Image 1 (cartoon, helix red, strand yellow):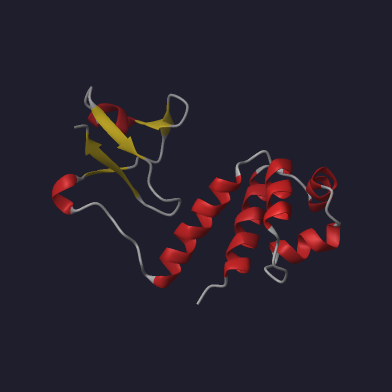
Image 2: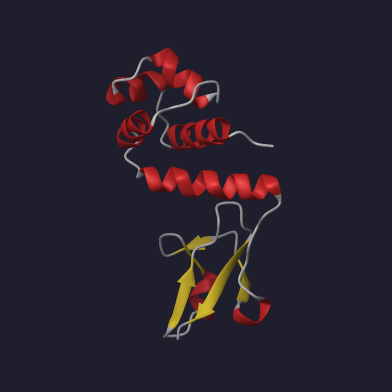
Length: 133
């Protein structure tokens, strides 16, 4: 079982590393001690909502993004991945070579004029297209 504080810490660490920032930079910007931020990232300390908001602001990302990431990670760890019913989805494999600033060739060719795009969970391997109503 994954603990919430561990999942939150991992999400924050991934975001910080993706930005190529150091613990010191983020702790200074968030006005949190370096040691405490390190403990939060390692899942050893429970961060208050105020502290999480300060860290997210320092990382220039919404707290909701962290919570969505954490929810997906915990659901994945618990084996509770919910998907659209098969009859309502069309799966398109994501190409490995991106074109047009992050859009993929398969997605560009498969999207109809009135198709709504549903962004997959961070660990999903396929793009799910749901026809617009």
